[in-house]
Length: 295
Image 1 (cartoon, rainbow, N blue to C red):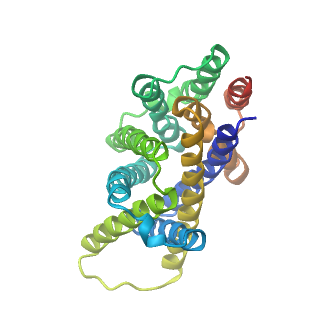
Image 2 (image 1 turned 90 degrees about the horizontal axis):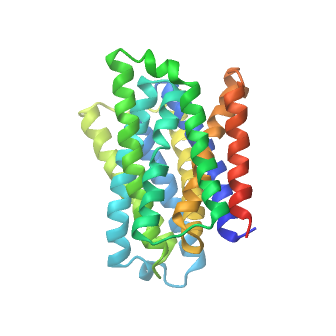
């Protein structure tokens, strides 16, 4: 199995887990800016600590070009995360995650058009299988879409689509960075530092001078943010490794299967039914990996 497939598989599991944590945090009513503040802080701290342990001159790795890449990635990530969090507070998970993963279509198209990637015939079937996961999950939840007549759910749908767009732009920036000689840890650290300051500023504006009280709910919010941030750091580093050693179009086809993880976790923790369409989606996800792996 090629290295980029291994990187993508582990990244898929990590992003699936953090998306489930996003849902749990949203369901428990935690403030999106507050959660994202600690996501950025923990991810940036992990990246810069790792950079300091692996580089003789860590500050020298944070170049002007790295900061420019990080500026765009941090902006798109922050906007995408806020939009996804808002969507999860307004619409069911089964609507939000399939729509959010539609960024896969955009990223695959970008890979073929702008990076001139030409998948092999079996890999084309793998892409179709990966996209089939989205199609099956969306088809199963067609009733939710048909009943989404109230403005709250429709707002969640629009936010999920906005999140998908921002995510595809963030992934494209990551591909450009991965194809360069710049330090990936410095890029991740700078990106999430910008996310931290962005969300902190938003949080301060929202609170409008109200005192911060460290109570149990605040500690829980910090815990969610820190856990999501560490998973994001590890997952995004693996994504960059995959982008640097393989085609972005194929990586995204496998990565689209990450929606299966929160669905399975919801089955275990919230006793949601494991329906036949979901079983088919899992089978398609595994088929996509097998087809991508065949040389």
